[in-house]
Length: 137
Image (cartoon, rainbow, N blue to C red):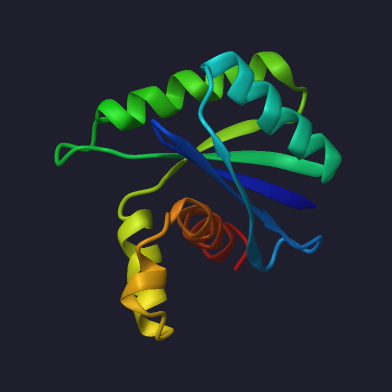
């Protein structure tokens, strides 16, 4: 079963997709934020197009373990997404996914100039890979 992961942001939404065996996460694309309903429709369409059996939405938390502002926004997006698709939508802790994506690009030797771009799709990969490693191992 393929899994589509979503790194929901205020300006951009990063997407990653697993292989059919749900073992490896790869970046899919980044879509620009338009509105919650339009964004949800785009993600639902991509999930259907790629035959995903699960959509994973990254959610961030504060120090007390409660969803922070971005985490609450991601939860609202997940609710909008549930209205657009029959594919199950699940929340997943995305803590530090963007920082991990940035670190990975540094470790891979990507130049500072090329690293200046957006990490959204790689953050979605980090979210998805953490899910795959925890749930499918």
